[in-house]
Amino acid sequence: MICGLDQARTNGNWSGNALVCEPQTCTNLPEVLNGQYNLRECSHVDADRIYGSVCSVQCNHGYVISEDIKWECLANGQWSDYDKTVFCKDVRPPEFLTCPQHLTMDNEESEGYTLVKLQPLEAFDNDASGTITQTLTLKLLNDKVGTEYPCSTSSKLCGEEYFKFPIGTSSVNFTASDRAKNSASCIFTVTVKDIEAPEVVQCDGPVKDEKGFIYADDDEKEVTWKLPEFSDNSGKQDLEIFSTGSPGVYRVGRTWTITYTAKDTAGNTAKCEFSFKLSGVRCPELHRPANGAMVCDKLAFGVYCVPQCEKGLKRLLPDDISRIPADYFCSVKGRWLPHDTVGDCSLRTPVNEDTLSQYEFTWYEGNCNDEQTKQQIIQNTIDALESGGPSFVGQGFKATQDKTLTKDDFEVFCGPKNESIIQIGGGARRRRSAGVQPQLINMYSASLGSN
Image (cartoon, rainbow, N blue to C red; front, side, top):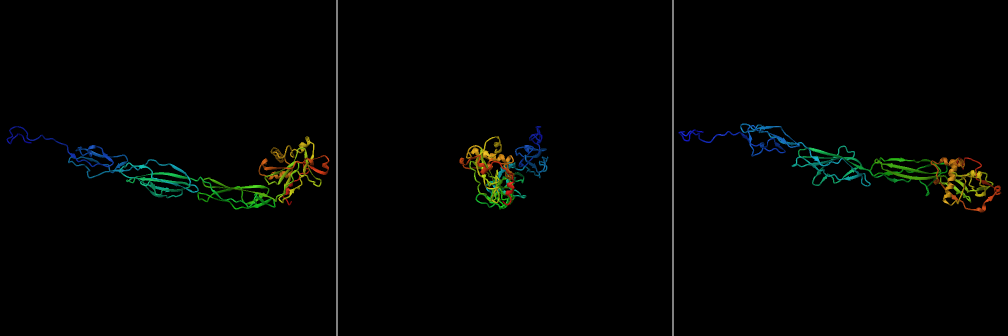
């Protein structure tokens, strides 16, 4: 500036404009992706970055600064550390919108697996401009390493369209990764339940006749059969087999029921059950006493029989029969013991306190063909057996049964009605009457001998 308007400097004024001191400024700093400066003017083109300004970068959530630097605008219009650049590094992994905890499914029909379609799970990432890639790792049942499959967002598939998950529990691991190689996992299990029971392949049992009988010529017989066979949809052969019996020696005179149960690892069961009737040589059918009935067991196929009479009648047997049995037993040799003579209910006897007591279990009232009367006849036999009678034969039969006797264990065979044969008094001289057993002998034990 010069004092005066002209060269003579005679006007006393300064020439030129007034001087102004302006602050030194620096250029704007470059924008930082996924972050911002602490001051707006640090990077804004229209803002002034004056001498002494200090700028630093703050990263968005999920990002961290690569290097913590502060830039200062210097007096020369340059930034300190201007040659250094920083960036915001993505450290936040993707997130799954949903992640199953556990899936339970039933096996496919008749198969040891179920088919499962596994599609990529929905996920998002803080880096909106990047893409998320997913992989699927399967550890099926006892697989310790697992198999990895890439997932396609376009086809919505991970490797295969369907995977075979075997019966049991398998592990599923979806991994989502962003372009910064951050990754997150969704891990869950898939359990396939075996809801099908094993199948019976073979359940023949022992060879028997068309009525289910096996015959023996002794009181015991060795019975054999091919062991049952089972299969299971799981494909596993470690089925547990339980049985109520096995091939071996069995007692004659009853129905034997054998049950084999197969159980798979899921607890499903299948049963093979067969029965066989083990009998000695069949005895011929006993005579059904006229005016009476014959009660025979069904447990041992009619080997034990008890005759009964209408109330007030006694059985008459020929005089040459010295033994008047209260019951009969069929031996394994096919012979009735003590003999096969039954006689008819043809001797009238007074009904009084003594006879009612004496014939308590061998008299019945009513028509034998009526169901109610038949039930009374059977109950008479059961009561006699429970009371220690009718003989040692009956007690021997009872002792061989492994159950409490019921009415269903007996059946009644009614004799014909014939009042013309009924005698009073004198007939007893020609025939021996039967109502009580004069002699108690263990015919049951005898029947298992050589008879």
